[in-house]
Amino acid sequence: MLPWWEILLRLGIAALAGGLIGLNRDLQGKPIGMRTLALVGVASALLVALADQSADLDHISDATSRVIQGILTGIGFLGAGVIVHTGGRHDVHGLTTAACTWLTACIGIACGAGQWPGVLAAMAITLAVLIGGHRLEGVLHRLLGGKNGDDDAPNKGSPAPED
Image (cartoon, rainbow, N blue to C red; front, top):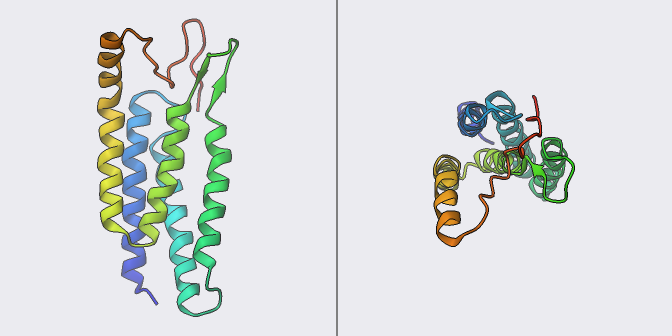
C-alpha cells in the first residue's frame, strides 16, 4: 500500500506536468488549456494509483490495465471535441491540442504508476516539440518546399475555436 504522501506527490506531479502542457496551449490561444490538462493529468494519476492499491490487495490483478484502457478511451472523446473540421477536405485544426490532451493523460498514468524517468522524458520531449516544433516545421517546409502544416491554426477566414 502506498503511503499518503506518495499518492499526493504523484498527483501533484501529474497536475504540474499537465499544467505545463496546458500553459503552452493557453499561450497559443487554443481551446484547451492549463486547468483542463492539469485536471486530466490528476484524474489519470489518481485512477492508476487507486488501481495499483487494489492490485496490491489481490482484489483485482489486472485492475491497472483496465483503468488505463478506460482513461485512454475517455480522453479520446475529450480530444475529439477540440478537433474542428470546417469546409474543405484539408481544413482541419485542433489536432495538436487533441494530441496534447491524450499525451497529458498518458503522463498522468505514468505519474500514477510512479514512473518518474518516463514522466521527465515525456515532459522534456513534449515541451520541446510544443515550443520549438512550429519553428522547426516552418524551416523544414521552406527548405523542402512544402506547405506549413500547423494543424492547430485555422485557415484564413476560419474562426478560431473557443474554449
